[in-house]
Amino acid sequence: MLSQQQVLKLSEYSSLYDLIVPKDNLLRKINDLIDFDFIYKELLDKYSVDQGRTAECPIKLFKYLLLKVIYTISDVDVVERSRYDMSFKYFLDMLPEDDVINPSTLTKFRRQCLKDTNLLNLLINKTVGIAVEKGIIRSSSIIVDATHTLSKSNPVSAIDVLRERSKQLRKAVYVYQEDWKDKMPVKNDSNDLGKEISYSKELETLLEASPTIREVPSIKEKLNLLKESIDEIEHHKQEVVSKDIDAKIGHKSADSSFFGFKTHLAMSEERIITAAVVTSGEKGDGPILPELISQSQNNGIVVDTVIGDAAYSGKINLEKAKQENIQIVARLNPTISQGIRKKEEEFDYNKDADMFVCPAGHMAIRKAIQGKKNVRENQVITYYFDVEKCKNCPLKKGCYKEGAKTKTYSISIKSEIHQEQIDFEKSTYFKEKSKHRYKIEAKNGELKNVHGYGRAISYGIENMQMQGALTIFAVNLKRILKLN
Image 1 (cartoon, helix red, strand yellow):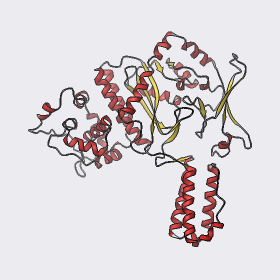
Image 2 (spheres, helix red, strand yellow):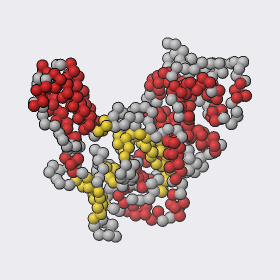
Image 3 (cartoon, rainbow, N blue to C red):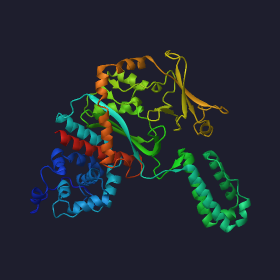
Image 4 (cartoon, rainbow, N blue to C red):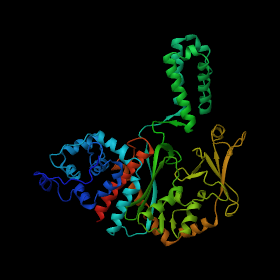
């Protein structure tokens, strides 16, 4: 049950705050800057007003979570520190003598009250509104980029998972029936996941046909684990397995990758984040641009220029931006153009690796330019994929021709819209605006190095969105205070 109104609390010790918490304290300044009643109103329908015990105020619980990202501490530590840190008590609207909550309350608050809430856009909208109201945001440009966050758990290759499961199963069988060693199917010695799945299924079939062996408790347990792993790997079409099924492998460069999530950001020239979209790690940057522009506009930003890297200068983005009279200040890479292909959305350009990625998430292994130089209509770039992966790919239908020795993807280098962009790159405006791009890289560094955004603190994309919402809210508030 949530009280219909917040109760004004008084204490003879409240004057201690004026003595102990200085006027320039960050938490005091945040309390003075923003009215947190919008959190109460947003979450009101998550509570009953006449049933159950009186609940902790959602504003107070939200502030606990905000303290976590400001100071990069755990649930247990933020509660413990609020027991004795007077600036924390002041920020939480506690009386000096008030006791703290149980840390488990924060877990329940996240799962039961913040779940299914568009917290990310809500908090960005609130801070952008404050920045606009105070005249802090004056530019009509947004700078865009994506930053990666590692999953809370490290991935294990699917083939290693199956090998470990089958190994444990064989051991359990041999303990009960040692002469079964000669009956077992031939193990797969290659690194081909498809062959490992086939071997695991052979092993499963063999044991299913022998009820006296299969029903032995230790064997049955290991067999069920193997079957469960096969089903999970085939269902999710993943080459890696993790506790976090939403996390995916993404690429930072041609030679390095990460397992986790991406947060696609838009930021004003004054370094206020105006929009954010959280995706799994394999998603490309370019396709997210329209949403970043739309969110920024909905949050009160006038956008006439987008500043970014080559990932955002794709043909589709250039055409949409032209329709909306928005200029894209991003160096044109000819590999962005999909030419006249009808299914251009299926293959995505990864600007860090300078390669295309197929719908199954496999990256091209090399590329070659074909056609006459300086003849834009005839030149194409052909990307070559690992045909061994294509042969066993669950998405090969309509993409890979059975028996083919190569799998390529070719695109034309230039088009009319790209030539216009090439001409724009030579302008003084383009060169001046390009100088602002470094700002978002510094902001990414702040998110990770100061607020722990380099690694997820929980599993699942919903929790990653919540972490992003609170972290971005904190950095925006700090920036507003600095500029105000």
